[in-house]
Image (cartoon, rainbow, N blue to C red; front, side, top):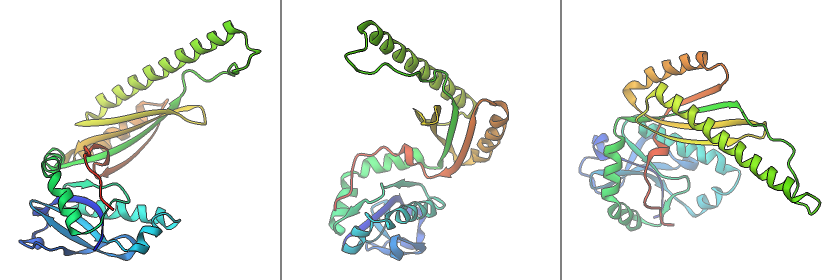
Length: 249
């Protein structure tokens, strides 16, 4: 039987699994396309899976796939409420029991280290939009008509604008770090079509400090008048799982 994998979790968080060596139904959690979910025991870990039928594989690449992606996240979030989880990427499958066992066995030390590192942690997700300090000007085209000196000047100006944007992004992300004091962070920055800059920030925090984090966010929205901010979470630590393996179809 092929399996669709959602996440790895701690076996000890599910006492009902006991000493079972075979997959055991996970009650109260429905998988993709209404399929039953199971706890697949693997030493000190358990993999949350559901049956993966041939027709399910085809459905992942249809408009149903968007709803399936939400279902994938829903299952992970349900498990996250009870235990530390290491999420699998959407669409991760294993051809049979042995393929799943082999993957977990070969990555056992890596998975256990991740579980230890992320135990009791959650991810908070910040989106910060600010005006671009260096708005784009009409550039010089790559044409033979453009004078060489003018073209080189344009390249220098573009490089200067990019450095200034990066400097602004670093300063803003540092400001957010000092304000929220996360355990770890992942930050990306891009220029939006509207001409503004978007900082996408994932903060890893202790679950016990989530309320404090939310209070700091409320304060930040009042203090940082030049920023449009949006907060979501707590989420499973999607951005902080160090991956070394993939599923096998």
